[in-house]
Amino acid sequence: MSAAVFFKLLAILATVCLGWLAGRRRWLGDAASDPAGVLGNAAFYIFVPALLFRTTARVDLGALPGGLLMAYFAPLLAMLLAVYGAEHWRQRVSTQPEPAKPAVRAISVTYGNAVQMGIPMAAAMFGEAGLGLYLMLVSVHGLILLSVLTALVEMDLARSRAQNPGLWPTLRSTLRNTVIHPVVLPVLVGLSWNLLGLSLPAPLDELLQLLGSAVVPLCLVLIGLSLAQYGVRGHLRGAVGVTLLKLLALPALVLAVAHWGFGLGGLPLAVLVTMAALPVGSNALIFAQRYRTAQAEATAAIVLSTLAFVATTPLWLALLGWLGA
Image 1 (cartoon, helix red, strand yellow):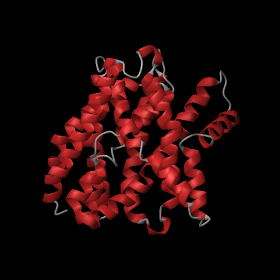
Image 2 (cartoon, rainbow, N blue to C red):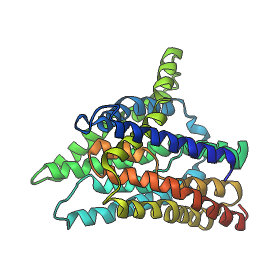
Image 3 (cartoon, rainbow, N blue to C red):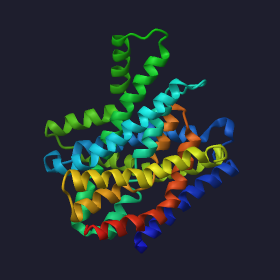
Image 4 (cartoon, one colour):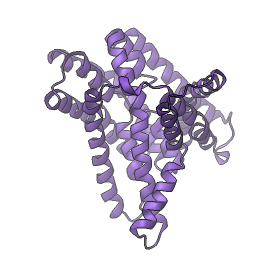
């Protein structure tokens, strides 16, 4: 692990610790006022939508490499659906089902810390050529995962709200709540803006950039606040399971599919596997906060996987070196 990546990791952990201290000292209010929930809503309804709209409105859709995207997102979505399906089955036989739990668990396993950790790591390890490939993946990473997961969780919630749900009422409710959503709606509007060939006016672009720049520090402080509010006691088992799937199972699946399925090697393969091996991203906690489900587990998984990332990354780099990537 390079010095740049190590110092970035220290900065992330320091910001999380600052959030934890703020929670313990009640600088943002006591537990009853739910400061973590307030920050989570601010991120979900203001800052993340601004970031997503600006990203989709500006991304060069024609430059996206289709083969590289398929080699990464095919195994990623397969893992997402596998975790979602397994947790969905567990909820059906549970005495206290949580309709949003399958989607929350799935995002924790598949949504990596692609910005705070991934970008400096790609820049330090792969240079300009590798960083270019990596940024292409990052540009659609959240758009694909958050859109799919939002549709899944809204479908589950629509079924749980109705006593005798029919097919069409469930589909109507799912479609409405998926489209009129603080994550999906700015993506759809941004893509429409992009496809129409419109450019963002300078004042609007400046505003969106300012709001989007708040996402990273806000989410890191939110992790610390949630850690102080919920703790990790009673949630370590789930967090360990998520960490193992995220840091070991997911990159192994991406490696197998990309290398032996799509025939990738060298720099593209190294970029894909490294991105898959990143720790759990803060968007998992924002998602959990939004649906009031498994916030403590998501928080514990983010912290645990970030610490374990220091040990697992050299293993994947060694394996990639052995494969000649």
